[in-house]
Length: 130
Ligand SMILES: [Zn+2]
Image 1 (spheres, rainbow, N blue to C red):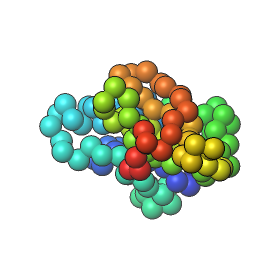
Image 2 (spheres, rainbow, N blue to C red; image 1 turned 120 degrees about the horizontal axis):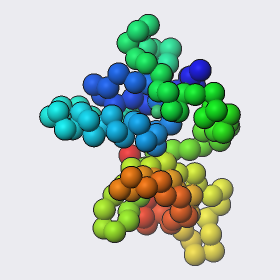
Image 3 (cartoon, rainbow, N blue to C red; image 1 turned 180 degrees about the horizontal axis):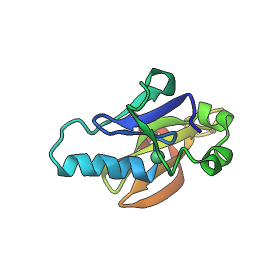
C-alpha cells in the first residue's frame, strides 16, 4: 500500500509515504556513515519507480499508517526546517488558514530532534521552506 507521492533518500532503496518517517532518517544516517554524499530526501512519485527499484517502507507504507494519515491531511502538509536550540531540524508543517493578530503566520510543525518526535506550534520566524 503506497500513496502516489512519497519520499526517498537519494541512494536509498526504500519508498516512504511520510517525509518525517523515523526509518527514512535512519536511512539517511546510514548513508552518511558509509560516506555517501547523496543522502538528501527527495520527492518521488510511486508511478515513476521501476518495478523492483524501491521497496515500500514497512513503517510508513503499512495500512495502519495510511489509515492514521488520511490523504486530505497529507495534501497541505509541507516539508520544512524548524529552528530549535539554534539549529534547523527537518520536519513538516501545516499552516494555520489565516494570519494571527500579531501579523504572523503560525503553523503546527512536526519534526525529529535528536531522535524525538516533536509537535509544536511555531511562527514563521522559526520556520524555513526546504
Ligand atoms: Zn518510512
